[in-house]
Length: 280
Image (tube, rainbow, N blue to C red):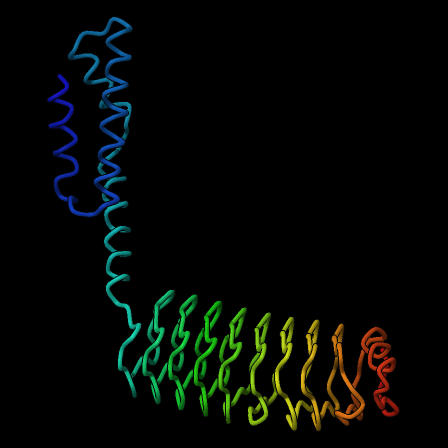
């Protein structure tokens, strides 16, 4: 009867063999079936009755196996499409759905990623200069330690995106809501931010000298240990913003800015010129 159980399970799994997850599922199922069969025998059931009851106990196993197989093969196909350590300069990835992909240590200069879904992907240590990320979903994407010179991010989705230690020379962010984005230890002197909002963004130890941030909205943002000589916040809105180690020598301009009392007090205590600031 043990062989009969094996034959039954072999028949169910035959069309789906090959995937590791299917092999593991088959082994677990067989062990459970043999255990159930022995329990029924111990209860006094004859072989035929024990076999039928054992098979009935697993329900529609064929549907379960089919679903597991489809998922497994889908994941295997995703693993095939890796792009790390590749020469992909000038590639067209516009509009692709490619979450959790590896583009690490690759040459991607001049590539088009506009409107692509790159959620959870990594570009670490790659050359992505002159690339287009307009409208792309870059949620949880690792873009640290890469060259993004002259890259464009108009209307991109930037949530928990990590740009730390990357080159953003002449990169352009426009009409973007940056949320929990990391821009730590990054040279942003020639980076452009147009009509952007910043929520939970970390600029710690970055170089922002001369950057125009006029009219932008900042909420829970860190400018700690940030080089800010000549930075302008004219007409900006600042809520719960930290400027630890800010210095009067930076000559940062806050004319017409609106800020909460805590941000105001922190800057005032460091000697900032807040004579034309609105406190709310």
